[in-house]
Image (cartoon, rainbow, N blue to C red):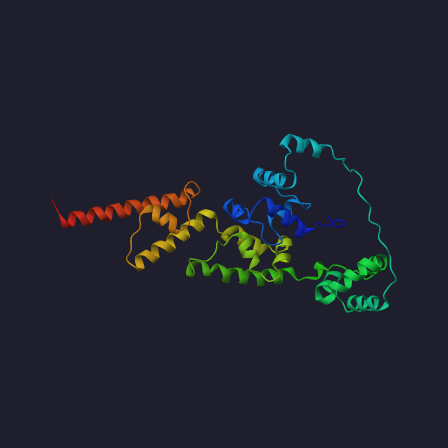
Length: 283
């Protein structure tokens, strides 16, 4: 250790003296790069390592010890319950930083917007060096939330409904479009988060979503329909398992209605094949 940091070059050198690089390659445990497993196992982490990695480290750094002795030695280390409390040190305020932050807030930006729009480093400096002033100023210049009571909800409801119907019309034209679920429809709206949060003020949109949101069964049937239409365009025929795989339908997770559709298709294909055979050999 060097202070609270690892001496990484020495650590790697001692480990590679015991375990050559070609051996590590054969074991598929290379120690290349700054984020390799050997450095991670010596750092504070929440990762799990295999028994082989532990044994290799023990043999390299604690040769001659048994596993039992190593565990007993580790259990003998004192447990530190008390954690050091970091105290905030207020340094001399930078008047230029204060003036810049006040200018951002007084321009009409919220605290979050001020940080995102070029004030990230400025906020960090003030938080480290002038925290009390920063938090007090942010509370004083906090922007109130917008007043949703002033919104003309009936007009917005009709405008959003028009957008939803435009999206619905895509279902019959673009058979490969994503599932038009309730959430999918809401995400197509302008200010989607507001629409979802205040959906009780949009009764027309709510009624539309209850009626036209696409269920899993409907979506699976639409995928089957698209594939069947494509097969007929190219004059191709698929077995049932091929159709399921091309549509991404997993066995045991396909909806009952989609299964019924495939059963009907299978009977139709079997009947068509039998008719072809009869026409070739009427006996």
